[in-house]
Structures are given as structure tokens and as C-alpha cells.
Length: 192
Ligand code: GRF
Image 1 (tube, rainbow, N blue to C red):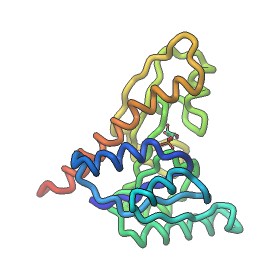
Image 2 (image 1 turned 180 degrees about the horizontal axis):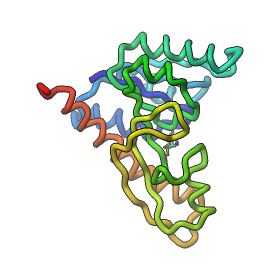
Image 3 (image 1 turned 45 degrees about the vertical axis):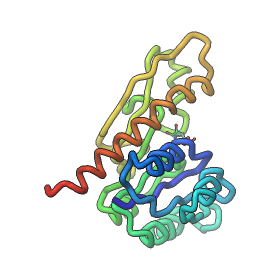
Image 4 (image 1 turned 30 degrees about the vertical axis):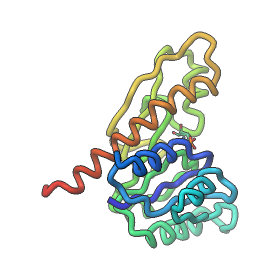
């Protein structure tokens, strides 16, 4: 199973995927890592790991449609079976998702459909929930919508800040992402 991973930030979840592949625990081919802006640590760490990287800079295109078309072309060049949005902070068009047969996987640091959007951790904390968590799902063209594959709960502790809570969620999120990719890769190999 070939995967392309899209990042906007540090890519620590991506690092868990890289580590699992290197350790022989996850049988996927990391075809490439792409970002929507230059200078991300996610791309830097991928390049250091010898993974092909690319940037389709959102700000370099006149509009979202032009950026989407360029992103689709760049990703398609790596012929992925699955595209993974791992901290990729842009909404892609339905055309992009269709180009990859709907195989667009997203991770989100909240228990969807609660707290979608760019500030899932902050919003959960502000609401005062005592339990939040993370979700791995097939993404459609909405904001953190689409069929849920896996979820796990994380308790909110007294005194949690957005940072401390997000770090605890990400520990779980990494494991969930790797185990989801393992299941998908195993399914891709099975005769049915
Ligand atoms: C993850 O919690 C992801 O779900 C969210 O941003 C975080 C990405 O972190 N949207 P990293 O770039 O993998 O460190």
C-alpha cells in the first residue's frame, strides 16, 4: 500500500508512521510527504529520513481551485493508494478526494462529530468536557466529516492547558493512526 502524507506543521504523528515503517511494524510504502506551505518541520524531518517531499504553497496560487488542482496533480504523481491528512490544515475539494477514489484519511484531536475544525482541543477545553479524544476517519470535502474508522477517549485533567491536553491526545492519536494504517494495509493484501 503506497501512501502520501500531507502535513502543515511539525509532523509528529507522521514521525510515528515513519518509525513504525522503519521498525518493520507497518508494511506501507511512504511514497511522499507534502505540505501546503514552505518551511514545515514535517517536510524537513521527512527529507532527513530520505522520503520524497513536495510543497504546494497555498499562497502561491490565485485561488483555492487552482491550488487544489496543483495539489491533486502533485499527489497523483506519487500514485498513492491512500492519502493521509496528518495535521494538514487545509480543506481539499471533492475533486481531490475523488481523484484518489475517496481514500483520504484524516486524524482529528477530538471525538468527532464533536469539536470539528482547526481548534478541536481548545474548543473541547473551553466547553468543559471531561472526556475528549481523537478520531481517524475517511474524510469527505467537509470540515472533519466522513465515515469514522477508529476513535479513542482521553480524559481531561484538572489544570490541563490546550498544550498539555493536545500532547496527551497526540500520544493516542499516533497509535491509532499507525494501527489504522496496519489494518488498511492488511486489507489491501488480502484476496478480498
Ligand atoms: C494532530 O493532533 C492533528 O490531528 C491536528 O494537528 C496535530 C498535528 O500534529 N490536526 P503533528 O504535526 O503531527 O505534530
